Structures are given as structure tokens and as C-alpha cells.
Length: 324
Image (cartoon, rainbow, N blue to C red; front, side, top):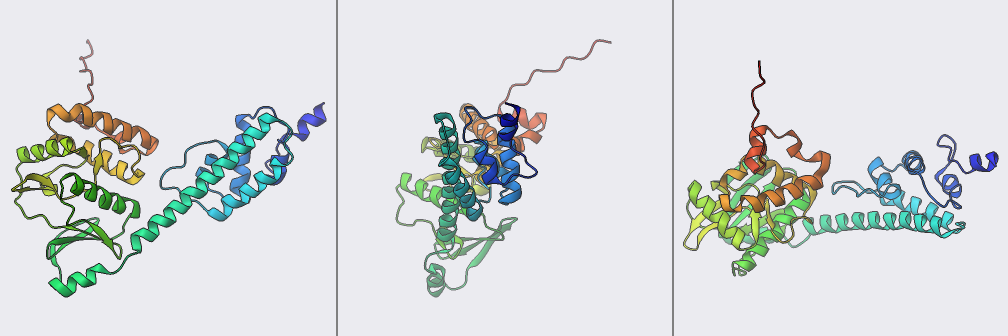
């Protein structure tokens, strides 16, 4: 009996992934140690990152920014498929099938990222057509992300180091807002990796007008993580947003990309909450908390000060002086 037991134990030092999996084809249960050993072997032999290996063998959701090596994941999938042919009971079959499903999910993430990258850089050079019509663009502003230019009735965002997922989010949210505002004649689009949006003519808002803009945006189904005068303009139609990088739909705040959640949480806790009307702060806090929780240990809220914690809406007890 002892020999059989030891024969079924994975030896991290000497077993290949194929050999380790074959040791488990008759298991009726799988321990945490087994999962950890498989992660170590896949990390060593198949060159999988720890995050990807844990996603496969421990069922941990891969973070939005994880890099998926399709070749390595496919190699693990082949090893699992080969071992599955030798599985002898339903318990083991279910576990191996779960691992295979995790591989398929990761490969799907990789394909989705490739598609987004292609969408980001694809499309005709519509900027060239704008230049032909309006001439060279006029500089408006710049920041750590890049700069903003004006060309005719368009603004162009040029990025120093673009995050395709974040740029596509801003593009889609801008057009979603235009649809709600019934202004679909001048939509945003991407051209050669630059974001082209409609230029809004108007004046700079006061702080109270920003709050009015936040309230109107909320009524239209959106919230903004960084409301401030620079992100709104006062027009004949009211106070309207002109920057959509941290605007999210109230009905669907959980499916947005990790980098957008991070920026929303970071900027909201560092002062965005000051421009939110009191009657909306409860709803903002609910969405802020959900985003921060989904980021886990990577949430910037981990490093929040007492002032920031209170600012976003959490109630903290007052400290009583210690009796002498």
C-alpha cells in the first residue's frame, strides 16, 4: 500500500507535467498541495507565469493585464488531453475537464486582446483627410498621458503610451453618451491609434456647475471618477462632459477593464468625490467599493489616508483620547 501511495505522489523535482498528471488519473479528490505542485511544474517546464498557471490549476481568475502565452497554454492543454484519456473515475474526469476549460478561457482572453489591439491600430487614416480639410491641428493641452489637439470641429487625443483597452473604453463610452444625448451625427472614432472626438464649444464651469453636470450625467445613466472643471463645458444645452476616460455606465460598472477601474478608484479617492452632489454619494460609494474590491491587493484604496476614506463616504469612529 505504501508503494502505491508514494507512486501517486507528484515529485516536483523530477516529474514532467505529463508524468505528474498521469499520477492523478485515479484520484477521487485533489488537495491544495497537488494544485501547487502542478503550478510549479507548469511554471518551470512550460514557461507559464505564476498567474496563468494558477488560473489553470487553482481556478483563480486571471487579472485583466495578465499576459497569456498561447503556445505554452496550448502545450498544457495537450498534456491535459493526453492524461484525460487515462482517467479512471468521474471525480478525476471532472477535475481534468475543469483544467481544460480554464485553458480554453485563457486562450479566449489572448484572442480578445489580439482583436482589441488590431481594432486599436486599424482603420483608414481619417486624420489625413481632416488635415486636408482643416490644415494642421491647434494645440489645446497636455498631460502625462499625451496631448490634446483641435482640428476643425474635432479634438484629437495623442498618447505617449496608449493602453488600448482604456482608449477603446473611452471611445465606446463617448459614443454611448452621444447616443443618449441624441447627438449621433458627430461620433468619436480611432484613426491610426489616435482618438478623435467631437469638439464641444463652451465655457469653463464653476464648481457648482460641475456638480450640476455630474447630476445630469447620472440621470443619463453614467458616473465619472474624476469630475472637475476641466472635464466639463457649459453650453446652451447645459453642463456637458468632454472627457470620458473615467466615465462608466451605472448599469454595468463591473465589466470594465482593470486599468479603467484603477484610474477611477485612484482619482475618485484623491478628490473626485468633492464634485459629487451629496444625494449621489451613496450610489457612488457602492460602485467605488465594488471596483476597489475587484482590484484586490492592487487597489490604490489600500493606501488611502483617513481623510480620503472619509471623503469617499465611509463612516469612521472618532478616536477618544486615552485616559491618563
